[in-house]
Length: 189
Length: 377
Image 1 (cartoon, chains in turn red, brown):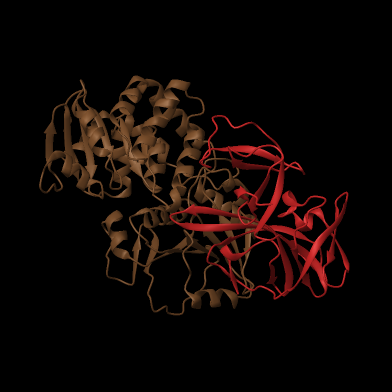
Image 2 (image 1 turned 180 degrees about the vertical axis):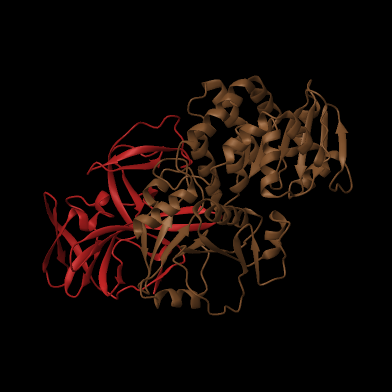
């Protein structure tokens, strides 16, 4: 069982005996310390997609999935090919299947991802909790702040914008927490 | 045959849960002709807003609503056509099981909290398929056409207008509460949670060149008022004067009388959800004390409402209102902010009327719920 607040992209729920892949989640505090999770679901048998809302404490049946390590091999338009790092099998996913991690998918990325399989079929990919990405554009630091408290927008190679500390400069590598898309600090690489 | 609706109300704290569900239940009976059972786990809270009710009976009829004590030891009961769980309350497992065993499962609605945030429109009316096969639907009240709207009885605004045009009725109502304000005094109601900001606001009211008469229904803010007055124990009927300010403690009144109180006042300080909505229907400038949430989540809700509410105000008037609300909710000094509000009083007063009218042009929450049920059928 999973609760509503534990849902994340890649989770597969069993609803009315059908497997539904969670493609996207949005956690929101609704009122008086209760919360909801808005989800985008895809029926893995029919391909039908729908949006749902769950209470943070709603109990849901999740399907135990197979997971394997995989790396991005190449991108072709809206198609993303990942390779199993142990047997080199290639798997293809489209952009919608990886909507939640798409902002951080870019050519040449070296992250070892978790490929999620349902009945032998790749249904989703999860990124490591921390990833490193290179900043391709950001404004210069306004006042030379080094505290890390003052934030500014920065653009990554694939166009994704993220809020980074004011001291970060163009071409620097930064660490990002993929659970909440937050800037963690300057990368050590 | 009348459609049967069950509303489940778990009283977590204060009077918002019971206030909203009782108001909704009454409206569904009176205006939609529905058979409504209101299940309440704490009837003492119910008695506070419906003084005719009894706190120690399993079942009672109040204004056409079948009010039931929600027992901890749930007994089998018939399942309604529409089941509303208010504010994410968990229904009795046996009742959920009974829903599952119906030939056709009832419409199960989660009536959620009121918020002006953008995400509400995207979540309103979305399904929530449960592990047991039942389908719940999330229903969100709100301020825009893409939400469930606000609770508003069909007769509310005409009643308010009639009351406003009848000075004798206003005078009689206030006298019934023991209130005889000085001529030309600004009448203000204060219903809030504990708030250290009270002191600076009362300082400003006391130093005003115009008389202010503050009416404080019994409640959580009383301790702060008491501390500012330096009084030992304020009780219903207590009247204290400091400079231009008269402070009077009122009893906790019924919902209908609270509406009248709001209509009598020039300015209303309200809190939570139910009184907040009623103050908007009162069409007077208002001050909202929002329910504090973990990680300051309430600030976003406050700002979201302000963003919506100040549309149509001049920049200085909007800024004055925003400053006052922020000061009240962030424990900042109220004195300066209050002066700014006074400087834009007429505009804020007209804006409150306009806001009320704009909101009233949208379907009310009870009607929206019934329409949703009809569409579901």
